[in-house]
Image (cartoon, rainbow, N blue to C red):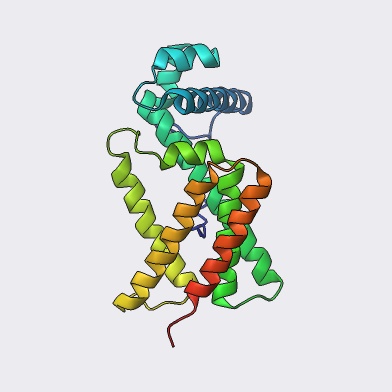
Length: 218
């Protein structure tokens, strides 16, 4: 489960520019070009893998000149990391909205909130399964695995706060780490589901496991 930190800063673009401050027409055009490039990159990465993907193919698939691709993303690595950032942001927004809705309905039990957030995360992984499957694989740019581990550690810390677990106790840290690993593993499995019914069964099964494992010992 992920709970967004909720920063209000403008999103930094890969080329060092910001969306803020650009003329509205140009900003809209830039967003459209970036969307086309990311969609094309996802298609080609999913078909060929990161290593075997060429920038010329992404440019051809998108219909955007290679020079414009470099201007926005600096190359293949920038495209991959932008897809990862997009997935993380969507998942954070989804789970944060779910938690806010649950709290608005008076839910304050840590386990109930944790499981609701986990369900939202897993449903998001199914909805974006092609991207989730790509990002969960081992074929990524140099340094990506370290970034993913860093984010995973932050994810465990957020879950610990949500579950009100004392992180100073090793047993508590291990319990939250196991729970987070269960969610991550289930998200990867969802990428191979045949249909929405099977995906729903997995989400329900995992949520039941999380409820059982979330209960503190004793």
